[in-house]
Every structure is written in C-alpha cells, then in structure tokens.
Length: 330
Image 1 (tube, rainbow, N blue to C red):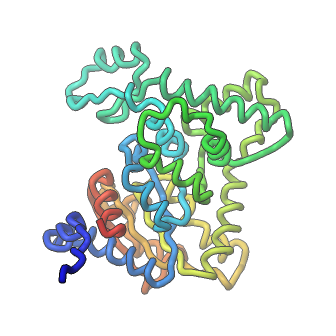
Image 2 (cartoon, rainbow, N blue to C red; image 1 turned 180 degrees about the horizontal axis):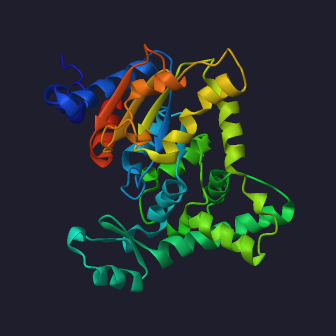
C-alpha cells in the first residue's frame, strides 16, 4: 500500500534547520509567531515602506493576500503605484547591477533616457508612469465631474476591476499584490499619498484646473479617520498584529491609531496591537523612530508588555520573502 508523500516545503525546512541564531533566529521566531497568531484566530496588518513593490515583493505577498495571511495594509504612495508600474512595464525595466559605480554623468544619461533609478532598477517613465497616468486621469476626472470622492487605492481598484490595464500586462497577474488586494477588496491606507508619482500628477491636474475639486481624492486626515473606524471594527473581534517592513510614514502613521483612540478620544475599549515585528536596516537608536526598539512603543500605549515583539535588522528584500514562505509553509 502506497502512502501519500508529504508535501514539499524546502524553504520552511531550510529555515527551521539553519536559522537558529542572531538575526536568523529573530526571523524564525517572528515567522513562527506570525503563524501562531493567525492559527489562534488573529489577523495581521502589514506596512510597506521603501521600494518593496519595485523589488517585486508581489511574488510572495500576493499569495499571502490570497491565502488570508494579510488583512489590511498601510503603504506609501510609491509602493501602491510601483506594483502596477511593474505590472504594465516589466519588460522595459532596466537593471543596473553596477549602480554603486555610477558617476553623476551616468545618472544624467539615465534621466535623458527617461529611466528613473531605484537602487539597481530603472523604472521606464513612458511605459510605466505615463501609461498608468493616462488610465488614472480618466477615473479621477470622471469622479471629479460626478462629485464623487475616494481614497487613492480605490481609484486603482476601479481601474483593475474595469480591465483598463489588462492589454498592457507584462507579468503574470498572480504576481501582482495589488491585483490580489483588489480581488479581496483588501483595506489599504496610504498616508502622504501626494509624495508619489501619481500624487504629483494629481496635484498638477489640480493646479491646471483639469480637476476642479482637490478633495476628489480623500485626504490624509480622512485616511486616519477611516483607519480608526476599521481598527475598532476589527481589533475588538480578533487580535490584530502589526508587521512592519521598513520605517517611515507607512509604519509610523497606522501604529499611532491605538493611542489616538485611547488618549485623544478617551476610549477605554481599545485593544493594543497583539503582535509586532519590524524588518529594518535602521541602526537601533532612541533618537530615530524607525530605529526605536519595540519596548519604546509600550510607553506610547501601542504595545503591551506581553505583546510578542521582534526586530530583524537586515535587508527586507531578503527577509520578507523568507518569512512569507515560512508563513505559507513553502
């Protein structure tokens, strides 16, 4: 009698055997605690800083979203749009593996070719940014004329669901985390969206008068209000964890919702974040928010003494896919 072979999980087994000490042990602990949090009925909120979409994190993050391992996201405007830049212009991207050796004149030459560099990857302006701009202009202007208002990601969801970008797909859509998010109608919160390529384009259209109402795209304050509503709808029902990739506004903005609800709104029914992990290459420092160790967050009313806390001081492009693989049991 033959037995069914055990499923192959080479990445998870490699991590379990070899990642035992220092940052490797922190990775293993964070991944296993993430799994335990979900298995215990919890949900996970994720924040994306840096250029994780240009680093093609969608290759693993999309599956995390599809398998309900991520339940809400806070991200920069850059991460929101750069997943779609890659979706529609991947074949036109250029890699510059020797980027550390570039002279100012070499950088100017890239600009002259309309290539915008992000570390070792150049995003093509015409095929990526302008292609998406044309689609989004139509949605923004239609909403503006109709007196409708929406958050930045909601306009992108509309474009994806309408199939506006499908003729331009240059990667497998299963590798786009934004497509996975749109299919799940995943809550996304984008603080400081105007600090992005599409945000700059939208501001320009407001300046020229093509868009009459600057508030057609809902503001950062409204984003915090919506986050507060979602948090209080979610966290009292199920423990909510916080998985932070990088630092900056993508992480700083949403983690503050808890003390805002408790201290500013004087609510006494606000659960703290039930899990915390940050992947960061920021040097540990009490003068830098991104480098502050998790225990400092206890003093701000964000985490509890007993909250599982992890910091992995390493490159998120290496660490995040490994944690996701462990959580997905790959």
